[in-house]
Image 1 (spheres, one colour):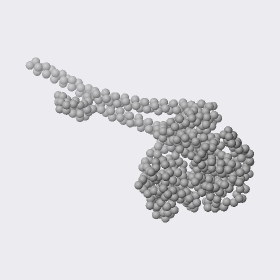
Image 2 (cartoon, rainbow, N blue to C red):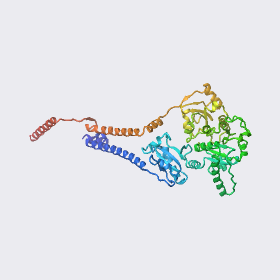
Image 3 (spheres, rainbow, N blue to C red):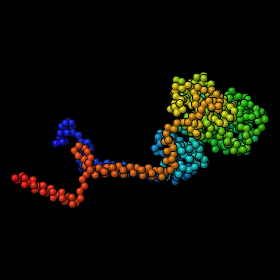
Image 4 (cartoon, rainbow, N blue to C red):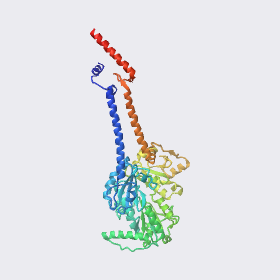
Length: 562
């Protein structure tokens, strides 16, 4: 009667969970238990299947690869030492990483295109079969995806752009000799300084420069090899082949050139190297007296001596950057391999590095505070850094001039950089810089200490640095919006124990859920949906209840008969 009345009053019959029969509740609880149990089993089977599949993956040797190879601890060394695949692009990744998933189709498409030039391998850092590779101090993988290059027994970081064209260009550069032979300043410009639309920057045998910085060596005591100039296209190919042979011979001919060649092989992934043929001694002066480089070396911070003809008598090492006024001359010991290596490492980046997502980690890892000039291109897309007004162009030139000619108290302390304020608007909001701010402006960022200096009213670089020194511009702490990165690092560092803990926690949650559902069996519900304790009877009480019901039936029968 109660249910009928309730249905009529409400017009629509309703059976809420709390008003289900005890049998229905048990049935529903049982189904939920089974669903949770099956989900747990499927998850564990999936993890096991993925691990088994990855662990059992193998790679063939003896022929160029046309697909991305899965590398594990078992096949890693064998694959990299395969003579048929001497150059590798390696991706260290995690299956859950969004950027890794986005990169995967690009690498898959590249694999068949570059077969025979270099191979592509992937290492799953969450898989027990390859985890030890990622944890090796040789790699020290801290983020995903991490790309590295393997060549001639050495591993190099890849910090370039991650589109197919950029990666293929870079790998083709790595497949060439680490030092390119040049015969004149014009030859140098054509191969390294001209922009791509002008026919240079990579159109001459893949020798294009990637960041605008080139190191040029010259030693008059180097061994000369005569090369006959050719005119035809076939002859040009022959000349390139001859250059490779010649440069290798020249690089072993003197102690300085041996050091230069060894350094170039070590730093080929980050730097670009050229060698002026010893027989072209007269061309050296053109690197100082040209339409793009100044004739005077007296103001250069790395050249304590003015240009002198006597400099042609000994080995010479120059750093030349596109769009700068003059080269920087190495003034250290030319026969100290460590000094040459350190000097090139300190100077391979542009004086003012253009910060992008792909090189931010590399630039911040050098240990200096970043002095960032932030520009905001007007009426341009966020990916276009051209079209600056006169004020902004002057600001950028001021940064470059200070980076090259400033006192060591500044250049040793700061790494100069430029950032597109439109493109990195979200990042800059952390430092109180928005699209409504005044541009250009300066941000000094200390990544290691998570501190920064910012004052949009001071846009002169010298005044800004002076403001930091005298306390006018105060140091501020960067807001820590999230600790996800630290948690993930801790999780990966503790593998596989952290994974076991996660699975144990998941099992505990399933057990708790099942226990809660089981608690429903200890209750019954009244007609109004209220939960009340179930009456639990002993055997003696049950016997008395049955006898009482018998007596009641007998009395009822007697009353009916009467």
